Length: 87
Image (tube, rainbow, N blue to C red; front, side, top):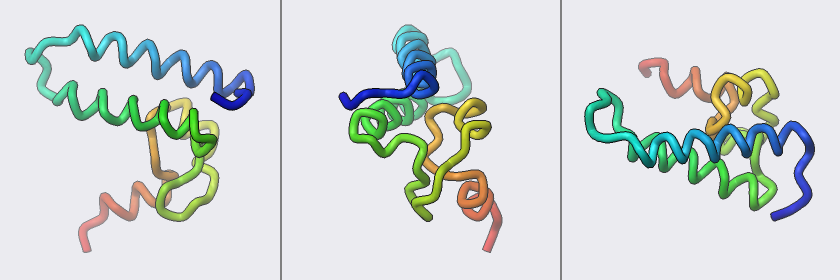
């Protein structure tokens, strides 16, 4: 793992905590814990590879506020909104 900034360390800790909670969840939740767990694992991998916080579609910075809201996000708010819009 590369040297992380204090912000990245906080984000990593939030992701690790989320992963621990998801690992203990049963199937009683309406959303699929396996899908969320996969997103968290992918975010941790991006962090280890130095790609955390970079949009996987446009390669621009995701932005601190968006990552604080959803630390496992792989897309910037603009790309995420484009994917949600019907074509």
